[in-house]
Amino acid sequence: MQVEIYCRSFTNYGKSRPAGGRGVENLNFPRITVFANGRSGGEYHRFHSSSLRRALDATPRATSASGGGMKAEGDGPALLLLLLLLVHVLCCCCSPAAPVQHRIQMMVAMPYELGPPWQNPFLLSRSVAEPVIQLAIDDVSRKGFLNNIAIDLHFRNTNCSDTLGPYYAVEAYCAKQLDVVLGFASAYALAPVARLSGFWSQGVPVITTIAQVDSLDDRSVYKLLTRMNGSYRELGSTIIHLLQLLNYETVAFLFHSNLRRPAFGKSECFFQMVAINNQLLKASGWRQPPVIDFDEFFDDNYEDLLKRASIDPDVCICGYD
Image (cartoon, rainbow, N blue to C red; front, side):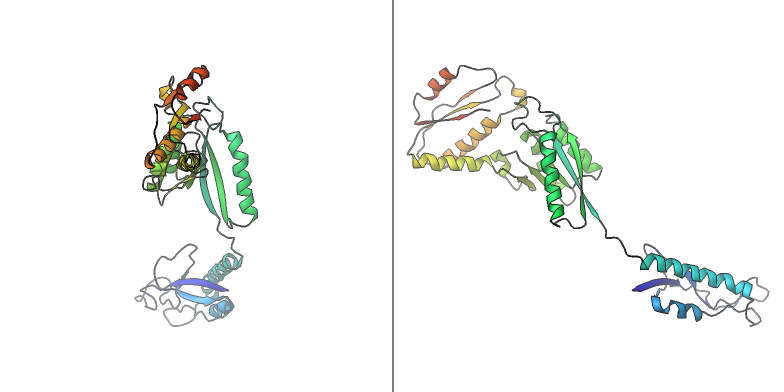
């Protein structure tokens, strides 16, 4: 093992002072400086640990103006200081260095309470998500995938709010506590974070089990978004293939929408029907009667709704929570 001793040579090295000067007039050895975390300039020399004693023994003594050797009491403190510095370096360098542990700051944006279903359609909460996330971290740690990487979980209570979710993400980024984002219970809260994450530092991945809206398929906008359950576009493609196998040509849509609560945005049922309809529009030979939407939390006359939806079509696609 190599031990580094950094010796800085000064410009007045070996030069004599004028007659009558005080102190040591002819400095015949460089001053020793030990650097812990870097170098501060000058000339550096490297010694192997086995040659430290030889280097110490070979260190010249300072001389007086008359050319005679210095007394022991003047020579001793300098050599003692040199010895102490060498011992310090040996203790620091020869002890086994602990591996550097990298820490990943992971924010989990999730409501702590379920809240109303029109704000939390997937019924997600911290009590549901945290055990799954912790089991996943423990599993990859046990299998050795993380090596010297530690994951710091930071849970944030979005309270089913489309405002608090993006706010906590921006706050964590400004505090340098954001390397990856998990969660969100609403696509409306997730979308702005997924748009911004590609511009933060080297990019902040966003991983979610929701946000299957097909408008989030655009990778040029949502660059680092990973949706573990895919996209509603795939649902639409599957239904189109099924309808083609059954030779159906006319399709009706009957689905739940937030008609009485427009402030909460479109429902997941609406997003599903839009994705299916987009796939129908890409195909040819399909006829579509008017779309029928209702609010399942206020409308309960399902018989009338079904009669209206079944007047003309071959098949009625229904969506409700």
